Length: 146
Image (cartoon, rainbow, N blue to C red):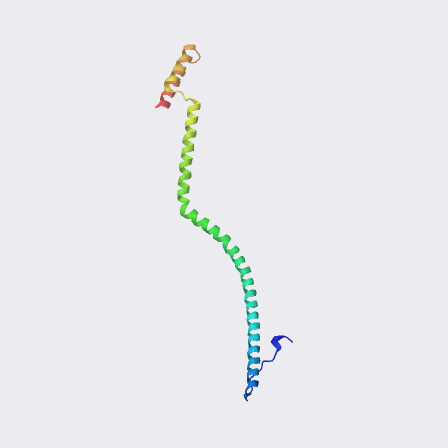
């Protein structure tokens, strides 16, 4: 017979005397101890079951709340540090553009206005161009140099 179905002994209205009273009290105390132990065991099992369920929900909650938390912290970082990042990117872009322009100038070897006039004079002396064309080239070289 399961212990949960064991009838609980109640003290009778008339108190037994002597040894019978001690035996009845001992039986009642033993029954109370057994019932209490099983009641505590059932409570512990219920608590364990609830803990296991809570662990599952806690894991789910951690995953659901953890992912947005990562995105939220990244967003806060971008808001807080975004202007500095943009300024650094612009500064770097200006440096790259300046380096590119310097390289192009060095590679192209742009002639000075005096070099262009000297080339135009050589073409005039060779008879390749007319004096009017020479004057145009000279004026263009002087306007680019200024």
